Length: 106
Image (tube, rainbow, N blue to C red):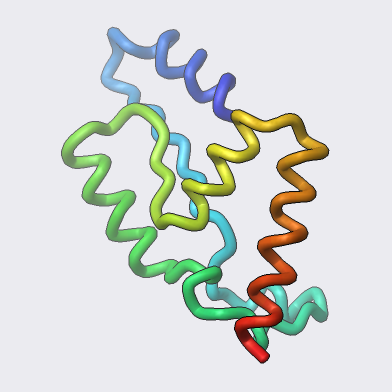
């Protein structure tokens, strides 16, 4: 998605069209309940607040309408690890992180 958004930004840079790629991460919505996944044990800092993300989007559109918005520390960390590390190492790192979260929550 990142490369696709960058190509659209370049393609429409001289037009009034703006392209903003948003990578919000995991959100506190009813999505997980609908698919039967329990989120009660997840710490609050892992789940993003949709209202805060919407505010960040509106704010960003007013200041710099083109580019990539990653609201929150956890989504930024996820994005960076996935961009910098090989997939097998990134997935291993996220498994360790997930297990640490489970230990902290208990």
